[in-house]
Image 1 (spheres, helix red, strand yellow):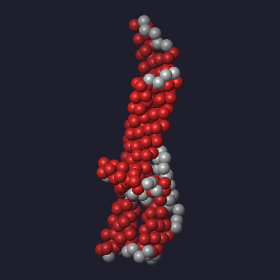
Image 2 (cartoon, one colour):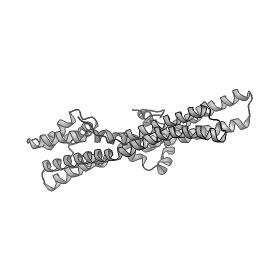
Image 3 (tube, rainbow, N blue to C red):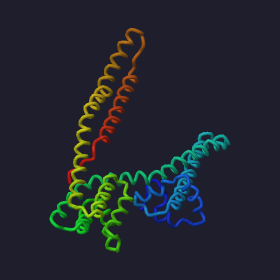
Image 4 (tube, helix red, strand yellow):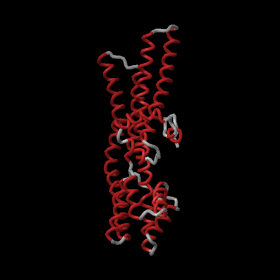
Amino acid sequence: MRVKFLLFSIEKAQKINPRFEWIGRKLSKLFISTKYNLTSAGLEIEAEKYLTACFFSALVYFVVFFLLFFTLFFLRDHAFIPKNALLAFVFGLVFFFVFFLLHVIYPKIMSQKLATSIDNSLLFALKSMYIQVTSGISLYMAMINVSQSDYGVVSKEFGKVVREISAGESEPKALEKLALKTNSEHLKKTCWQLLNSIRSGASVQGALQSIVLMLTREQERAIKNYAAELNMWILMYLLLAAAIPTLGVTFLVILSTIGNASVGPEHIILIVLAAFAIQIILIGFVKNRAPRVFVH
C-alpha cells in the first residue's frame, strides 16, 4: 500500500532499520495525532516507523531539488558560486519541509476521504439492514449480508466487525472498536446507537429505523441549504464573471478617451483571463459545496 508522494510503500516503511527509529520516536512527540490518523486511514503501521519513513522520503526530495537548483545555477553562470550553492540549499530545505509536512498530514486526508466514502453508502447499507432485521434476521446475519454486498467501504468495515465476532469477540465489543476507529461521524453514531440498544435490551429494529430517519433528514436538510445558498453563488458568478469585466472594459475605454490613457489589447486579454480564472474558481467552489447525496 502506498501513500501519495511518499517514496516508500507501507510495507517497506515497516522494514526500516531499527537503528533509525529514534528519529520517528522524536518526531512522534511533536506530531501526536499521527498515530490516530494512521488508524483512521486504515494504515497498519506504527507512527514511529511511518514518521521515520517520512523523514527519509523528504530527505530524498531535499537532495533532488538541491541538485536541480544547483545545476540550473551552474549552467546559468558557468561557474561555481558559493552564494548559488547556499541558495540551492535553501530551496532544497524548503522542499524538504513542504514534503515532510505533506507526508505527515496525508493520512488525515486519507481518513477524511475514507469517511466521505463511508457516508456515501452508509444510508443504503442501513436501509438494507433495517429491512432484514424487520423480516426476522438477527443483527449479526444482517451485518454478514451487508459485508458481502456492494456497499464499498461500508461493506469492508462491517466485514471487519463480522470477522472479529467470528473470532470470539462479543458483538458489542466489536461495534465499539469500529466506533472508536472510524473517522465517519455518521458511522460512529450508528455504532453507538446499536450498542446502546444491545446493552439496554431495547429493539435493534427501532434503533436502525431512527438512524435511517436521522440520516435521511440530514441529507434532505443539506439539499435544502445548498439550494438556498445556490442563488447567492449564481448572483456572485454573474457579477464577477460577466458584469464586472464588461463594465470594467467599458470604464477603461471611457477613461482612455477622457484622460488620454491608452487601453491596449494586453489590458483586454488580462481582463478576459482574470474573468476566466474567477469562473473556474467559482465553479470549483460551488461544486465542492454540493452535498454528497447519491442514489444507490
